Length: 356
Image (cartoon, rainbow, N blue to C red; front, side, top):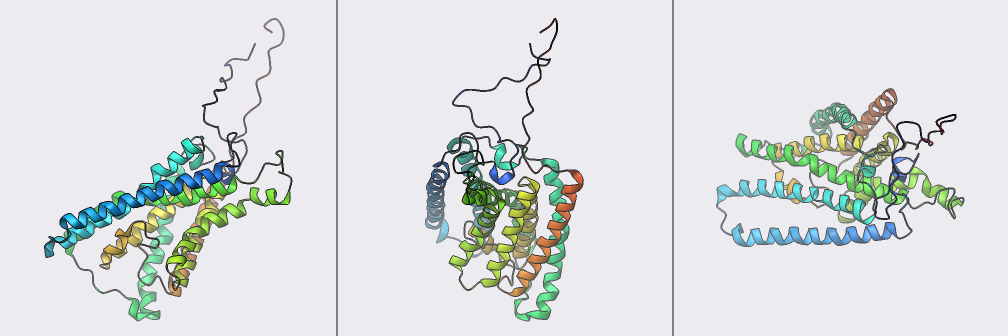
């Protein structure tokens, strides 16, 4: 006889999705009981196929719109077209959210919550705190950019914004509504799916080959942080080989958010910084009359601030990420934010005596 209340029944169906692995860091949550050696390559292959079809659908939609209405646009409709491209570009990035969730739930056959944090859910309170914390360093660097640009690179200072209040309001409405989803999609893909794919490769210490030096290295957070933090910068460098400073800034941002994801046990810190930073940078793009740069959607490096190709952007990124990391780590320590998944408690002891 079990002590009351009885333990929850264990789901033994072979179709049940895998639970969170016990006592693991965030980057290891992808190595569940259903993980096999082919899980990582299969996930990458399906992701490539789905991303290809998404990209083709985007190109087809843009082509159809251009054929139907492109040649007949009146001069006053150009701004409307630019705002529509802005919304289309942000939405196309946000569509990676269902792709990533499909890969986790169907291909890897584990709970979607395991992609969000070590607690198997999105920690909304922690996300809100991280978002508030991100406001100060992002606003500080944005405010420092213009005077520093005037002093160091006079040619980088933008001219006055054009378009009027109505255009600015329409563009800001699109940005505020869609940027959170666009930012979340990039973090789910880079700091979420990619980090856990790399982190799941190394065998556990009790598994076959788990005691080798290679497995110990692969189990460590280093490879997962390095891969998920630098891939975006590598893609940008491949398409913009002359933008060394911008690539370095992207690498700093990626590595910082990847480390925070591991350190805090979830995506909340990375998403909070990404959302606030994107809102500020995209707002600057609209204010400076560079709204069309945001609407490129899947093009790597869209929405970068004016002067992104100079050492100034690297300096500001280092300050921004450094300040944010210090405050978030301090706050996580103070609030006791969980860094590892929970251990399953042992079964309750049987009752002894007349009720046994």
